[in-house]
Amino acid sequence: MDFDLYNSELCLAHNAPIRLASASGVRIICTAGRVWLTVEGEAGDFLLAAGDSHLVRGHGLALLEAIGSGRVRFEKAPDPWRKLVLAPLQRLWQAGRELPLLDRHPARSLPVGPRHAGA
Image (cartoon, rainbow, N blue to C red; front, side, top):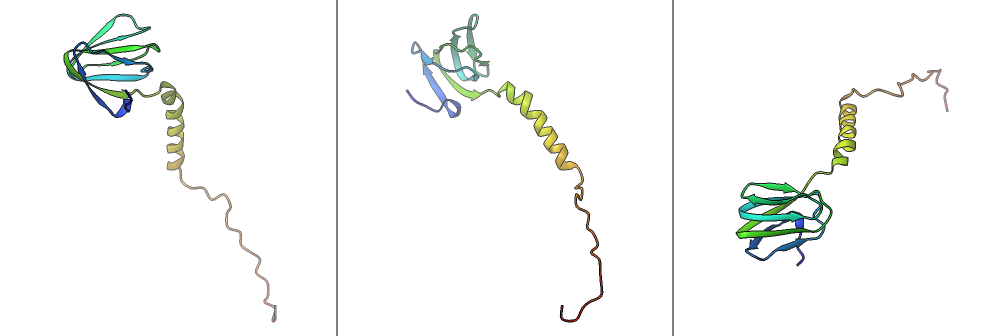
């Protein structure tokens, strides 16, 4: 099954697990019902009720299944490197934009000489 993982809400059925092969960095939000989640490389299983969420940190297979019926939404979690690297650069950029403009080339007065006819 192909679907856009980050712009989707998925309805789950009881006893019909969904395989998420590359869900690392995805926040799974239960929007209705109850869902069960297990992720290879993460200790324990997770039971999510409506309003609960879990950020998948493991890099292995994730299995998602409703208990009864349930709905989930997926969001891409912010990249921690983006926060560490990009945020300071954005602050510097903003600070630079707030500085007054400096005239790097001050206007120089040109020597004014007598006018020559025909020149």
